Image (cartoon, rainbow, N blue to C red):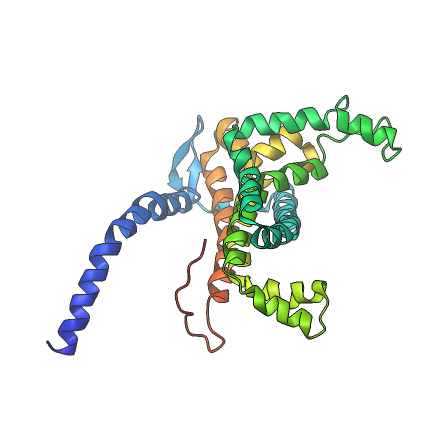
Length: 295
């Protein structure tokens, strides 16, 4: 069989396998995204909803003085949540990969236990913990760490705390999958050559789980950027994020085009980490890296 026929046969074989996934992604991901971008160029209806005219005023309305500050708050809180979550998850993944199998199973169970409870119930539980009459506030007052009139709820710090709690399992699991495949003999060799455990951790272990770090970063950062339930329930006016504005425009103001315009901005913001991820999956010469398992 000639080379062109072989390549054609391989292409048809690969296309037949990937076409169902490609069709699924096109119908349920690509087309809705394109529809959102198209609606952002429509006018608002007289009684709400989507109007009949095409206009740029909807996109221009994003320049409202309140929106840039909300977009910036969304970005910095998402980045802060991602950084703090990874700072906690990396040592946990390292410890899980080095303990005994029995202890590893126990730690894995403790990691996934929060998924057994409804998401809203967990947030309400945090509201009880952070309540002015809650045990955490009383304990901090007893330790003279906060004033009796201090408020733990409805602050950006409360939103950040609950977001870290929510996203932590999504960081631990891919990091543990990468750490489990790591060759710890390299870590031990570095210590034998005089490196401290901390230096070996940052110089050998962390670069060795780079794929897991990128995966965990995406799995935490993207949901944080689109978060709206947590800021709505435990945050205040100064904690409003872009997702809250989109929900309010959709349900209260019925300004669908404006909500679509902000969603388009949110999509672009969420696409940037994906580009960084794809860039990190290339070789130094710019060619695509070999396919690896990414959790």
